[in-house]
Image (tube, rainbow, N blue to C red; front, side, top):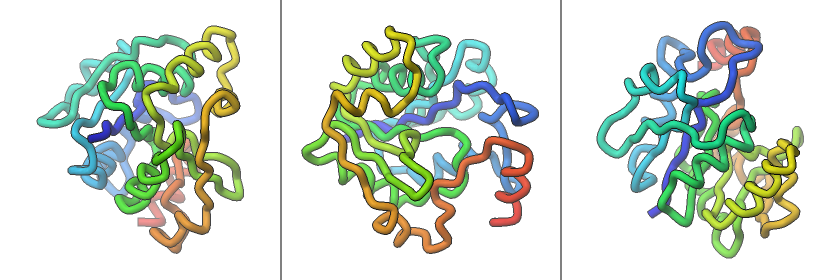
Length: 197
């Protein structure tokens, strides 16, 4: 079975407080995510930086491991690389910790899209969604080379691997409101999210 990987190591530049503990409608986003993807994966890893380990431990339970990212200071690209290095699965689902409206069926659809490819990623009118995407473990080489070069744009390594681009129209059927890929980056986003629920 595959591994689910929640990235909780990013800096909260525009959000007050810690993104890994933000709440929507009185519930922590990571708790919502864990509930939605429960049973889809053999294991879920919550990957964070060293400073967060003690606080993130509240999420640890049977089937959920909180782990320190081995790749430091490389942004979301480093988070993906860390997660894949820590996983013992060939198939992995990467998820940012700031997406409160994910849908179980959409996650499964993205995972199914990995068949015959190294990456399965949604393509929306706003662009690619690499932090709600599936990756094979053998992407580690390409990601590592890119990170070592200093280029931290998450999707640039896609040129070196086989990628299945999933149409937004196909994903929208799991959430006609179109909110399933909504992520929270600012207090304004938080207010909008609170109004959605």
